[in-house]
Image (tube, helix red, strand yellow):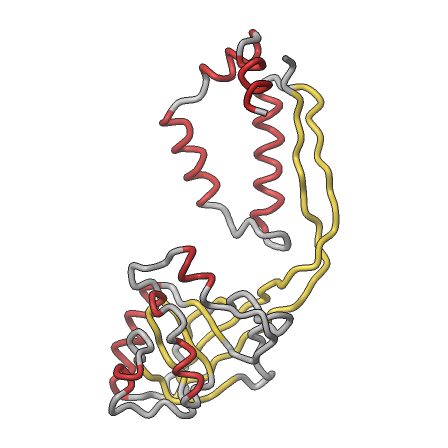
Length: 226
């Protein structure tokens, strides 16, 4: 608890540890972790982050540094792309978290349709646009309005950074029932290019695979003598 933590900070080891914490150091640590691959179990950043924490605990002189490894079952993105049917130009896409157990995996041949700029998913954004059968680009800050595109017959939605990439918005992008709603993320430069092309409604193909995998996860422990 807080009292125990305060008492530990009064020990020589705890005092030295507390004095070593600076705003610049915290910023550098956060930037280093943010720059890793995804830290969800099953992705490269998970083991890297656990290793960094273990090594940091050891360098701080903490005792009984231990890594507890256990198995979890998680969805793992095996890769995906969007391809312009006419030119073959290709862009990476990243699968969003599954709806229930249903991942955004496409059929082997992918999903083919015309590219549509859907704005932020409001029904008024779709005026004059053919949504049925389309692959729809949407700003991430659309809350739950992306479901409007699906209700009008879109085959898939592609989200991009519109300045509203926030936790609350992310929580809106998956639902608890196992609905088949293919949803993907595009990096901003690729989205800008595709938004330009969407004016001519080119045919595109989206292909993605996300599998449930049992993978290792990690708890890292250390003891601060007090």
